Length: 406
Image (cartoon, rainbow, N blue to C red):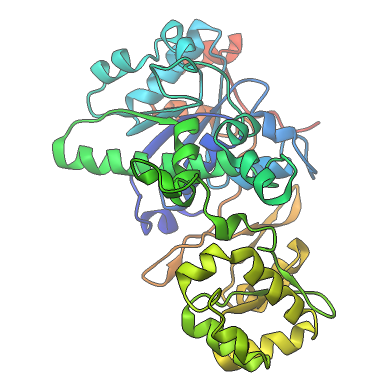
């Protein structure tokens, strides 16, 4: 991404030092980078583990790394060495935001505990992306997406719908918590602009995902005494799925009373439009399995094209079911230019999903994810590290620069 493009983005001028790894933290900082922040990714000598996850055209630049690290810079620091710890402190001194995903008990030995850093740098926004909030029996325990999906109820929701306890087939906890982390960081920056004071922001995965799942699934437990068991019946219904047509699948969603009335009349089943089970939102919620099963039998009578045309005509929400490999060919995504190509001299042609939000009609451009240590020397020079000190750190391996493949 060019400096001109960066300057036009909402977070232009914000400097973020990101010492997180894997997906949650890098996804959060990628959003900050997409929106114009300068993100300095701090990596250990071996690099983020995702550099080796998935297919790659170049060692250390694997698919999962590409997915959550675009538009950043990479600095390699060995925090096991005193020189590496000093290098990180030099970066933090010039940063607006420092974020990490290290377990809290590991921070103090590195001089990175919140109390110390916030006292030393009163304007710093310090974001700790943890598995669990401080103060509970899980505090400080390691956490990955599967662990949090299980603890937060996500796997149980899958079991309630399908009969099989399983994880969502996407790293939902990491990505959801990453989005919340990005929002929380921006909120803390806005607060600092108003007060002049930074502070510590804690983003715990477990609590974040529990809150996410209970938006609809807290349900009757909002009340005292509870008016029902937890769980929103509509989305737990086994028949809540793309409907099988005569030649494929269609995503069909009558929702309001008027939608369902028009749908039942259009398919030649007017009696269902006045069926007491289906005539109101409250009744449909109580009889959701019967409603969806009935709809499924009706949809199976005709092919996908029939249902797309009929629902468009009667103004009922409808869409075909895309396979993952269909997305790049989706006519809407093609028309809006969502996927962005990047040509890299070493890796060749690459493609990235674009940045969805638009500001004044413009979508932020996508920048290439950094090679390991590609920006170590430049970034530390800009941080004011004296040349002799930088050379010493490079010689001892406390910091490391990119080594092109032989």
